[in-house]
Length: 302
Image (cartoon, rainbow, N blue to C red):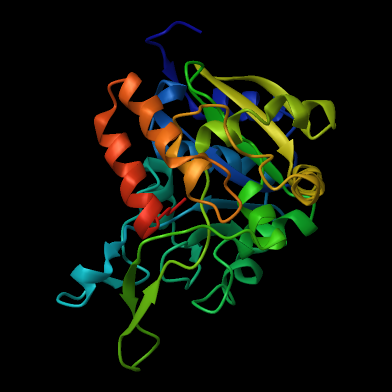
């Protein structure tokens, strides 16, 4: 495909089917729209193409997460999260909200948007009382597939590591950030982040292990982008098994990484060493960040 050619819906459908996506599939879509190229009709066309392939018995789920504010800000201002709050998760995440049949979960921050047979099942009970990634956990039990479409120049995480971290009970230091939310006519409530995040570089390095364990179902191209399709149940089972043996299995190899070396309750990094590694790289802001993290904790929204 020529670099500047227009990609049509029919071409997308053909390449999605070549990736092994079938009628009735349950899909967790993570799509970098710009990496695909110039799609005729934009993000809406991409969603329609997937819906055409999976049919009425299939389901697509996308991130629909919303921004947060510091507790200091929330004490003085209202930051209300509701069904209409735009997501920071990209063009596809916001395009799916324009579809009349979409269902969006009621979690104040880690919202998911979904269309299809299981849409109500996945979203109706995902509330402030739920684990942030509970929707993905349900998908794993139904042998869903993760579809990651990304730029060839980017690293890629295809796993279910956030679900595994929750199941394993791993805890991370954090500052207090959140939103306000409201249920019906009840008074507004404050909701603060209560889950752990993780380092994207550490998640990215797990790809070869997923491939060895048969979790990668397909690798190829969609438009100008790379696509990887993976079995969510298989990635989760492998992650939980690894986490029980070594809680640091998802850490990156960078000695200057503040996230992996200092933010977890089982992190074994040395503050002075992490600061020194960042100073050598002239990343003085990260050196200061390490100091703040060590004494005050950290917030990770991922």
